[in-house]
Image: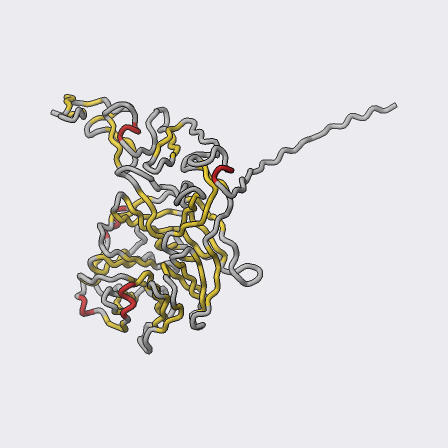
Length: 421
């Protein structure tokens, strides 16, 4: 008699549990530690990548309250196998927002994607001040970092996005300037070159065909043409090529091939750069926030959370690509890895709306990576919460910030002061 021995191998495959939901209470411990995503809130701004996807930035509502959790970049395929746009899907989470405190930092607008560098540009609202900012794609943590402070100037910018040999940017503030590079750090602000003195614009576009011509719009309704080679020029060197009163309420402005497209709270118009005809309206009765163009189709974002398209020659025939809806998925609060409300090896911060955030401790310490207030940094009065991070008070140092190479005194508020002789 033969005895057969069978060996049974069990292969365990990794899997991800996706929690489908209709209400916050269905998500782990529920609100405020976890929510069921409601409608998607877009930030103004739309662009496209080199894989035929539209790009938008946004944050979901909770089903309980307003915007919640981590913002993200989303992609909407321009075409699918049927020749129409596909379903929206999350591309990556965007890190770098801070919900509360003097260092509060929130996305205000998505400006542009520059495919040759894999850069995403934004305007951030940092404690009430607009900051021109960047996210460098493909570098792991997808964190937005500041480039330079705009100081509440009427700031608009465009980039040489597709010409490989032209790392050029043009922007309008109090004057028209250029960078001979793609700006990435604060020091780049010092390398800007003045093109046109004192000119204030509400829209700017660089001719992507030659990276020489600049097209601009003004608050008083004019369309102007200039050149990146006109250095420190006076405003009278700009050429007026058209006008339209709707430009005064402009929301976006682009130039593609031989046409300028601009949006406002009543629709979209196009205008030939040679000035051979006046503006032609291609979208009416829409409050348009932003637009982009690809292969003769204009894609635009409306203030009700829709993404639509229109043929530039169609005369107002529109196609819906996306309407803001829920994806019916659970989402933990910022910094939490699960829906159980636990924050191991970290500190839970609470904002003024009663929403928690889990922030990890700095390596080898009990000091949080992010703070809303000074007391978040610990019981020691030697810390300050600056720009959303814990740091020592001036002249103090060390893990507990109590070391001082001088004399320690306390001011009238009881705050320690390190006096260096």
